[in-house]
Image (cartoon, rainbow, N blue to C red; front, side, top):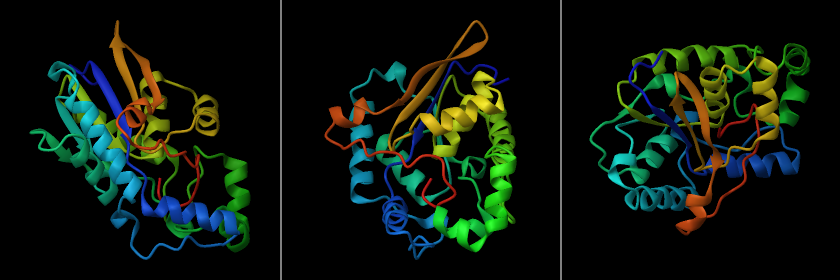
Length: 239
């Protein structure tokens, strides 16, 4: 699988306005995240833009042979903006809908409080099935997202491939590339934060994918941006 690809990197998009709204809503015990735009149109926050520019300075200082041959972005506004700030004018940048965030259906824009109060039966069903296989009405499970990511990876045609995606993308790339079983990938999601603007990467060694970087943010601090904390796996918007 992924013939010719030697390196895969994943940048989680920069901090976005929905992440800030979600944090405020969860802290206040609100049921709904106050975001006026649809999920695909959530913009970067000012700090998210600084993170994107820091990525740009980091790539600019890197030898060109270590640059990605192809950059693939989720179609969401915040991921496209991050990709453009990180590698402006890269000649092989494209958008692919298979890299979009997980769709949450009836749980869209609900906080954990909102899910428990408005859809207690779904809250119970998620606890019973687990994060990997639970599919909210009108939405996707992690397994559904993994299927479209697997399809995307079969189509990439560069030696070094950079993906610009979402928190769930990082979880599921570990599942696909490292062949982690379900309990391990869900444990990773609980215990390893994926900060905005962070880089996770893998290199191919003897036909196997080896984790090279895990949610690293040193490039942000080095280039004058804040490494904002990750929220962890959630049903809320802004992933």
